[in-house]
Image 1 (spheres, rainbow, N blue to C red):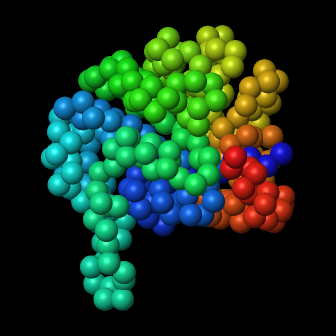
Image 2 (image 1 turned 135 degrees about the vertical axis):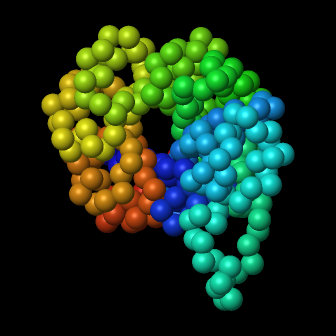
Length: 272
């Protein structure tokens, strides 16, 4: 079975992660899903940012949780990826809105308006000073879009079991993905997660701990694997029956899957 290709923070191999430009490029490549991390600003907005501080992606020591959206909107979230872009006289004009901080609402609107079904995998980051308010605000936004039902094009992911429990209480039909990055977590996690929850191991677990992956598979749970950027890792996912591959390089993954499963028609079917 052909897995869904999910763009990890957008087409983040080529473009700055979590920018609208990275997500639009991923959509144009045919990605069936988009992955994002969300954090809450000081004035209560959900924004797509991975790190708690902004040193890596916006060249400032500020923390997302202590800054208002207006302050974040003044920062450049793209230059770190290509610091020499301003010296390229032949580069096309840049739409600054594609490179500034991206709110989750804007990303949801982009997906809702796209001309085919695209799924969203939203990861809530913990620990955070706001605790469960992150999930509360997230579910409120999903309700605004009518995306709190079982057939909605959205799933919520977290390494925090408690965070996913909150989402389950607030929106019981939303699909949940328990992320795990260490094989020793699985024996504990398997006893407590919901029977319909997806499991999201890192690609390192597929490489180094196949017995753990086999144990997960025996429970009948779907596997969504991150971060799959190489052909040999994609092959491991196919062997394991993985349902979704989360990749910084969605275009490459789609091209490789086209060779194995067919071309454009198959790709569109996989995205639906």
